Length: 472
Image (cartoon, rainbow, N blue to C red; front, side):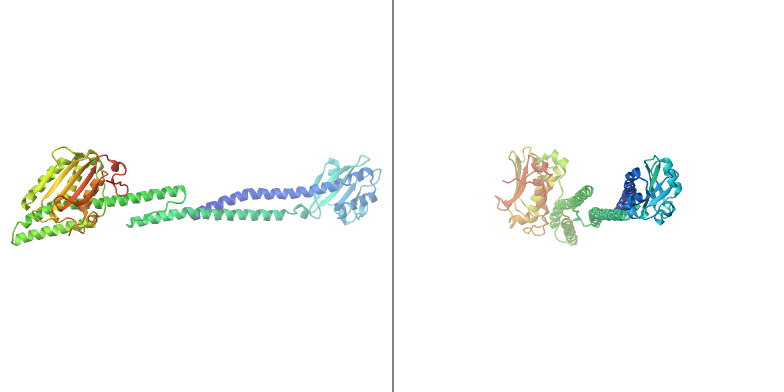
């Protein structure tokens, strides 16, 4: 592309230079010719007053010698035959009649007798080729007797072309400089266009190779700038889609924790024997595989927007999930208490999302507290928000801040840390948040604040980059 631009600019500039330089050179040549003949006409006109007074050859010769052309032997006067006297040619430094010498071409001038007679007959100035090269200007002049004398001035070729070669060289130099300058400018413009295009192609190649961090500087001409902006936006969308896909895999895998917890508890009650050991080993292996899938997946999947707008009844979802977990709690001898679930509490969270968050919190209670540890789930409607509290009487969390970081739950051995992250994202998608603290039962309290005004959803859909937490 760069070479093509240079070639186009070279061709266009060359045509423009030729189109202007050739006519201008011809004009310069014509101007030099006109200048030479105009000077010859002025020199011929200086003899007119003398011819109107006298036709004496001696006086005419002295008048010719007083002029520049005459002194240079380039001017002669052709007198007609008057009163029986023969026609003669007078030139400076020459004799009359046939003894004018070589200055006037042997008495006939430089253009010849025929040209002189034609000028005298027509009565108008004319030019004719000279015998020795160059041109001759023939200027008719009226005598006092009424006859016509012809003044002949020799204009050599060197005077006609004086300065033409220099002017042509100057024009050629200017034209060449214009061509070189235009090529240089085209090359720079091509480089300015090719640079962003090459960077865009390189970034596209890197993105195709799986380097998701490849981006293009948003610079260059307007079209390439727009292309760079579009590419970067596309790359961000690709990264977001891959992130969402991995997050979906992580969340779905984490939801398998609920049936795995049931299997592990049931396997623990099978007693001894080969079949029981094999069942427990299979459950442990399946749990390890699920943990591997969760750790492999990466961050962040936005909640389903349409379902979130529809919302759900938090009390109904809690009653439904507590019916499932209460059966397991009874098998382990855990006391269960619920509060605030006897009335309808609408929240802007999709039903599957809230169920997954509850299963994550209650699953942590069963996984990380001893059997027989009581727990409670409370729902409180605060007007502009709904608060869901999950409390237990277990050992608690030593480092709540580390437990809230995705993939890093140092206080709970064997945890991927994604459970609380699911809960946090559900809360933050509504403009709320999640807090960990000490419960009234003596263990851990997970406080989920769910906003009802939807401010966070209107500002960017609950993503981490565009999320705005409400401070309390």
